[in-house]
Each structure stands twice: as C-alpha cells, then as structure tokens.
Image 1: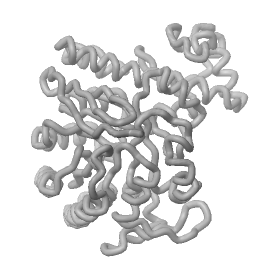
Image 2 (image 1 turned 90 degrees about the vertical axis):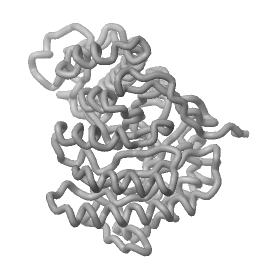
Image 3 (image 1 turned 180 degrees about the horizontal axis):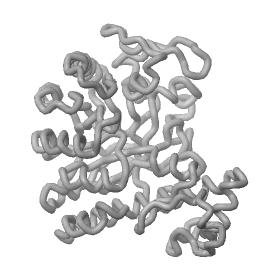
Length: 370
C-alpha cells in the first residue's frame, strides 16, 4: 500500500540552475529530470526495463489518447496504468490540453463543458471537461496529474492569448476542486500567456492563488524561436514558487534543456528522442547523426561504444544504415534506445555539474555542440 506523500526538496543551486528531488510513493525523481514519453502507455519500440536501465525515473503518458484507446475502464480494471503497462516508475499524465491545439480541427471549445472532441480514430464524440480530465487521471492512478488547460497556437493576436489564459485559469480552479484531497499525488497548474510577460505573470499569479504542488509552463515549443522561449523563462521563472517543481512542457532539444536549466527549470518531456530514433537520427555528445546518410555505409564504428544496454555498442553505423534503408524495425529500436540513453546521460551530467558548482562550464562546453 502506497502511503507516503508527494513533495519536493530543493537541494542546491548553481546560479539559477537547481538540483532537487521529487518524492512520490513510487520512488524519488532527481531533478533536473527528463521524462521519457509513453503517450499511449508505451515507450515506442522500447521495453520499460531498458528505459529504467538507461536511467529513466519517471514516464509521461497522455489522458486524451488513453481515454480514446483503450479506454479508462480497461486500465482501471487492473489497478491503473502502472499495472497495465508494467511500469514501476512514477507516471505523470498530461491532461489532454495539448490535443486541444494539436487536434484543433477536431475540437470545439465549450467554456462550461470543456473540450468536445471528435476522435481522430473513428470520429466518435468525446467531451473532456476539467473535472473529467482529473477523474480519468485519478482512475489511471497517475502520480502527477496536470490540470486541463487550453494550449493556444502561436499567434500575434494578444486577445486570443488573453482569452485562452482566462479560460485556463477557470479550468484550473475546477481541476483543483475535482482533485480534492490526494496527498500522495501531485497536482500541477499550467502557466499560459504566450510570449507576453504581463499575461504570463497574470496567469502565474492566478495559479499561485489557487495553490498547486508544482507549476508548469505550457504554450511553448509551439513555433516560437528558442530566443523567444528563453525570454519567457527569464521573465517568468524568477516569480515561480522556489519550493515547488518547475516543469517546461514539451521541450525539447538538448540545447533547449540546457538553456532552460540555466533559467531554473526542473522538469522536461519531449517526443524528440523517440521520434528521432524512428526517423534515423541519433543524438551523441559530438552532435546529431543522420544514419540514413550514405556516408555511414562503410562506417564500422558504433554510435556510442559505451552503451552496453542490449549490447548496442556491438551494432555498427554501417549495419544501422542498412536497417534503415531496408525499413527494418530494429533500426528504430536501436536508435530510440540510443537516444533515451543519451537524454538520461545528459540529465545525469547536468545534475553533477550543478552539484559540483560547474553548470556554467558545462553549459558553455555543450550548448552549441549537442
């Protein structure tokens, strides 16, 4: 029986970069952390045991997709998502807010009822209200639950962003009310406001008045430049509660992560390492490698000689190039695992650099390389 409560400890700072630990009944999460994405209850082409061996401490799944397929009741029947996908790690579930944007052609917004979806699979109608999103996440038995928000597309129309912000705040209040008392779980609010400092701070102030266990920045990585994203972090992060985890949603590239850690962010997620693995791209400490490229046809060296998980260091770039060009699924498995290992190694080295008061040196060495 899980009895301990959700909490966060800030252990050390190096400049604005933070070293911390999130405590959950299912285990501790060292921060800064990168959450490996398992949108539909699976990390694509990777066994959960291998992701754990690579250093993953938390998995992210998605409320909307699991609601659509296989359906919440099927997962709840076996005790929750951990049992269903054989995952002993803590799980954070996104609320479905991002799908309001990404599937906008299939969604209508009703301020009272929430988001009205036509399923991207069969067109069936689904209504995802703030209350229903929280209920689904509780039925999934998530360890960290996100409020339902409206994640707007990038736009220069400030009124659109402002209206979205106000709707998201109202939904955040309703989400908190539905969440009730569940001290073993964390409930995170999501700051909206586009690239506008005044709107971001208005959103943050509203969320702080409601009070959450963690605070996320949403509505970024939606088309703005990296410079614009970092400016938002510079404007907003100093005003975020220092005793709560800070989560930058949907980010990102290794340089995005380095820049965000430099600005005080603790948590990240992105499909980039797994999606890139399925398209022939490998992340390395010397930069990214496109293994589709013919220059690797006769390269008999491994991507990373130190990766011993599944004996990945025994597979040559030449062989992987052949697998890709033959449309063999093993290429996706090898490259995805490589990228998961790289991202977890990146976070481990970031944490060590903060511990050793050398984060700025680490940042300067790798920001323009990886």
